[in-house]
Amino acid sequence: MLGLRRKLRIETDRMSLRPPVHADYRDWAALRAASAAFLTPWEPAWAPDHLTRKAFTNRVYWAQRAMGSGSAIPLFLIRRADDVLLGAITLDNIRRGPSQSGTLGYWIGQPFARQGYMREAIEAVVHHAFVMRDLSRIEAACLPENAASRGVLEKCGFKYEGVAQSYLQINNRWRNHVLYANLRNDRRGRTETGLA
Image (cartoon, rainbow, N blue to C red):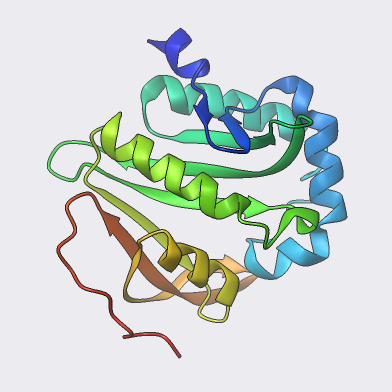
């Protein structure tokens, strides 16, 4: 089972979504560094060693363990045309039993933003989660002012569900987040609630 999960690959029109490997370090560190100003307003504060090889190695080992245990599906977005790393998407906190759910998180490098890559990745991961992993609910959260993230979630079928107070520390401040969910058998209509 562990070997099969490490080899997971999801194909989209333009990308291969696959787990990170040690050889990705230079591309990952370069893209994160070049996109730091673009990413840091929306992410938890980066640790001082965030861009080091050691920190990346720990991420790869975490990804392998998480996939082996079935608790997460961490994937890099690789453009098929030229094998360029575009960003990452993770289905984390996978819960089984009566819940059958997971939490989606993602980031895209600044040079590749607003080109439809993340929409393609989210749709592929949600489809994989519902069809191949038999999940029933995928959750996502973002800062209320993150119009790009809210927009891509809504275009991918996620619906607004409310606000989580002091949900995550972003730039060392506890911040409220808007909550979204995509349900495998969703009978809810589109809602404008929460859109400001």
